[in-house]
Length: 330
Image (cartoon, rainbow, N blue to C red; front, side, top):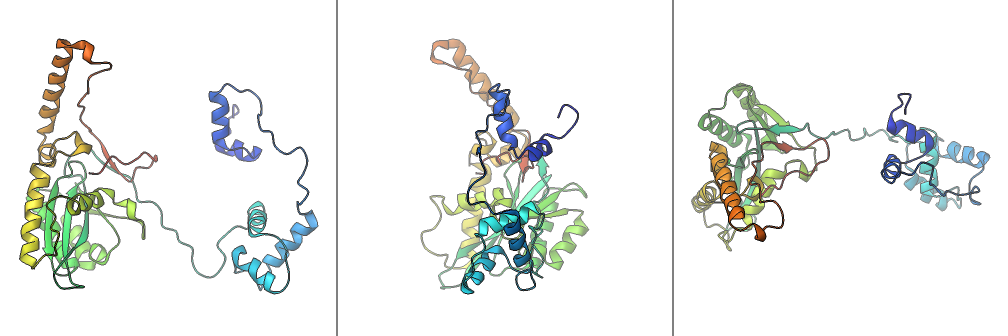
């Protein structure tokens, strides 16, 4: 490493986990502390046995199957070569641990990190179901949330899922928020309304960049999912299904007013989303800090540590790259 080798690759050559080396450095341990086996295990396959296993698993009969399928098939033939883990280990050691079969392996990568340092930079949207009095029939709540401020900037309730409804909603929200071209990224999952031709064409015409979650991954869109949980677990959420589409729309309007203008959101310093969206939270948090500092000066013995800072969160990340926990969404 002193000669320029990368930490991870040097550890790989030694068969050493990089975290182990980090722990040794932290503990100021200078030598290899691995106990390790002093002799090869008695059940280790010989070189000839290893080569025989590789020949079998790469034969025309088994070359498109995984070890989990190969082992039981061999057992049905009355043959035992090695366990699944041993076969996997041999394939890995010989650079043969690749996708087996004609189906193309999944290649979905994590969405790009989106960073919001002000309102109208990153929005997130999704659709949730609202029950109706007719069994099996639902109303659909379309919701757009500003990731930086958590303000609901657009919502609509319809009796169907459609990319046309979504396109109308995003157009209205961009107009209401005076969004300029190439200013905004809108993140969503991979549903039909999100990736429909009308919706994508509308985003392109507005100069809005679309972003999508990985298929089947629920935590790539956490902010709007947390909003839906807040909605459905709020004390005012009806205990009975909505009697009509108008009833559902009226209730959602009341919830949005409460959420934007009255709800003290824990992840943004216990200010309302509307206050943060408009920038009023800067003065509110500063005034709170002044109150706490004055209280500490009046009675310092009551404070064992520093005052609560009431600091403003200036950056919000969606799908952060460095594995930091996404800020509490609701």
